[in-house]
Every structure is written in C-alpha cells, then in structure tokens.
Length: 158
Image 1 (cartoon, rainbow, N blue to C red):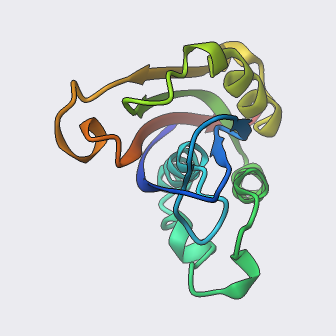
Image 2 (tube, one colour):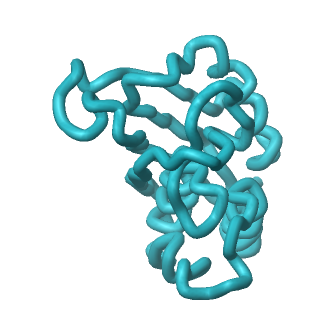
C-alpha cells in the first residue's frame, strides 16, 4: 500500500465557470488557473502522483504548455489514474477536504463523490469529500479563493 497527499489552492476569478470535483457549480465566480482550475481534482491528482513518487501535477501537465490551456481537469485526473493502473495499483480510498467560505458544498457533495468514483473506476464508498470553512480568517475567510487537501491510499491491484 502507498499513501499520497495533495494540496492545491486557487483564487476566484470573474468570468470563469466554477468547476469543483469534476462538476460545474452554478451561481459563483470560477477559479483562476491555466486549466479549468478544478482545485479539488488538482489536489487529488497530486495525491495520486505522490503515492508513487511520480512528481506533481505541474510536472506532468505544466501551465507553460498551451496544450493544457483551459484543459478539463477530469481528463488530467483520468490520465494520471491510468499511470497508476499501468504501474499495477488501484485506489483503495480517497479523503478530500475542501476549505472555502463559499459556495456551500453540502448540496453538491454526493455528485462530486459520484463523479470522482466514476473517474477512478471505484465504488462511491471509497471516496470521501468534506467541506469546511476557515472561520473567516485569511484569504479563504475573505472569500478570495479555495484550498483543498487530499489523501489517497492506493494498493496493488488484484
């Protein structure tokens, strides 16, 4: 078994759609980034790469490469997970915490979990997604952005 940890943060930016966990959340500013800026999937991708000491999302999908401009982070995660499978591993479980004052994520948690399970070819029961705030402190408390922490456990397939 191997454990990986991922962290990502993105500021809000007007004029973009808000993607979190592979789903669009309507009615809020999007996040700034080279890709679609899905901060949740970025942290999860980093955790998966980290579990096998394969670097980070930026080393695989650099923001200096125009190929990844506005890229769908779900596709990046799927490509990452393909590398995990190719090395003989599969997801055991993932535990993800989103830190944001807004939007409130409770109404979206089930859909996010289902989308991630679909992308990782596993049961939804293996994917935990939680949301918390920073109690109005710091850049998150000022509603300037979103941060995500992700931990994964992968195991040899079979």
